Each structure stands twice: as C-alpha cells, then as structure tokens.
Amino acid sequence: MLKYVYCGVLASCIYIALFADTASAKPDEFSSTHRILENRCVSILWSGVRNGKQFEKVHAGEGLLWNGFSKGVKSTFLNELKTAELPYRIGVLRVLAQCDGRYERAKYIEEVRSIFLSTGNDQAQRETALETLGKIRDAQKSDALVRVAEAGDGTFKTMARWVLANSGKPKDEAMLAELLDSPDSPVRCQTGYCLRFLDKLRPGTLQKLEACTAREPVVSAQRMFLVSALYVHSPKSRRAIIKPELLKYIAEGSKDEKYEACLGLSYWANSADIRYLEPLLDDKELDVRISAANAILRILCHPKHWGYR
Image: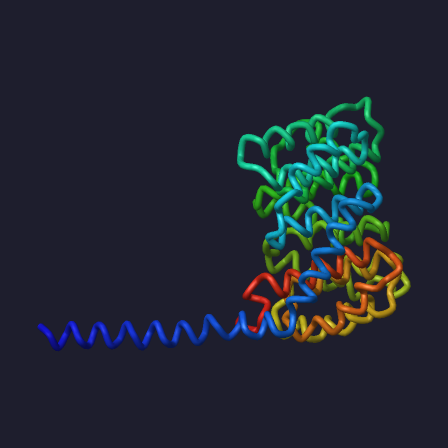
C-alpha cells in the first residue's frame, strides 16, 4: 500500500514540477518583452474611449472588453447612453450588451431591435441597428426582418440576412452566401464582412467565398472584407497563401483596409505577427491605432495566440 502512495506522491510532484515550468515560461517571457507593449495598447484603447469620435469610442470600448480590461467600461458607456443620439446610441448599446448578464443584455438588444423595427428611423439608422444585431449574435426572426432579407435594398438586405444567419441554420447561411454572386460590388464585399463574424462556414459557403474573392477586382474599394473573411475561415494551409495580401493591406492600405486587415489577422496571429501590427500604433488615424492595439492585445492576452495551437 505504501508503495502505491509513494508512487502517487512522486507522480504528483513530477506533474506539479512540469506544470510549474510550463506555466512560468509564458509569464517570464511575457513580462520581459511585452508588458510595456500591453500597457501602451490599453492606453491607446482608453484614449479612444475618452477622446475618440463616436464609433471610435465604440471600437475602443469593445477592444477593452474582448481582451479582459473591462473595468470602467460599463460605467463610461452608461454615462454616454444618457445623451447619445442615433446612430451613436446603437453603438453604445452594442458595447453595453457585451458588459452585462443575460437580463441587462436582453434589455439593450431589445432597444436595438426596436430601432430597426421603427420605420420612422431612416434606412441608414435601421441598417446600423442590423449590423449591431449581427455583431452581438442576435437571431430573433421577425416579419420585418424577413421582408428586408428577401426584398431590401443593397447592403440593407445583406445585414438582415446576417442576423438570420446567426441562427446557425444551413438555409439561413446559404441565403446570406447567395449575395456573394451579386452584381453589386458593395453587396458582395459586405457579405464577406458579415461572413467573417460567423463561427464557422459550411464547405459550400467557403467555396463561394473563395470564388468571389478570386473574381473581385484588386482595385475594388472593399475587397479587403472578402480577403479578411477568407483568411479567417480557411484551413491553415490556405491561410498561408492568403496572409501576404492581408499583410499588404496592413502595410499600405487605406484607413478602412488597415482597420479590417488588423481584425482579420488577429484571429490566427501569434507573437511573431506583432512586428506587422506594432508600427500601426503610431498611425495618424485613431481607428487604425485602436484596431492594431486590439489585435496585439488579442495576441498577448490569449494563450492560443502564442503558437501553441
């Protein structure tokens, strides 16, 4: 009996020692090389919350929430909600919906739904509401939502189909993916944007996305949405082929291209990719700095981004 106790204790000691070595490796490496960078990125995000334009505040607040720096975010945006008007109010509700538990989240989502459903609001405001519902993964179906998804104009239809696709049902995803064949470039590219947010694409959808990206002219103003979505959802072997184009947008793109490319890269980035993102912390555009800071924090604050996948 003593022999088994001794073996068990010895095995436990070995396990603890090995685990301690593994656990200490990342903090030591992190603290010696990245702590200052983490602080800089958090500072950029808080600067965005305090000093940015309306949706720059929203992007910065989300970056803080997603990376575990939530302290103070809820109170800041509750204060913003007191005076926020459309369309900014929708963005504030989006941040708050990601701060709270189920009851509070439901309250904020219901207000966003009501903004979409109110025909007294203009179409741009209603489309912004649909984009927020898509991002916070709402999938509540209504007659009005189905009508827009079937017969709406341009990207208004796209956003409605995104909300339906949040259901996870194959037919709803296929309905959104149909728009990759639209003759209208903004519709095709915005469809790619919506697809990026889905957890996983079915093989047929991924094939349509790949074909659409290949067809889309390089000079297309929103092509980066297709490239970003394709990078996010492709298997590792395909990502290696797509990544150089994504990095080109990061290095040479417009404000919107850099912003989207940083988000796309962050899904599969590891510490080696920080060298591509760090220069953007000095970009003249605050929204680009916010996106780069969020991407770097996603690498630093989540172990899966340390090359252990």
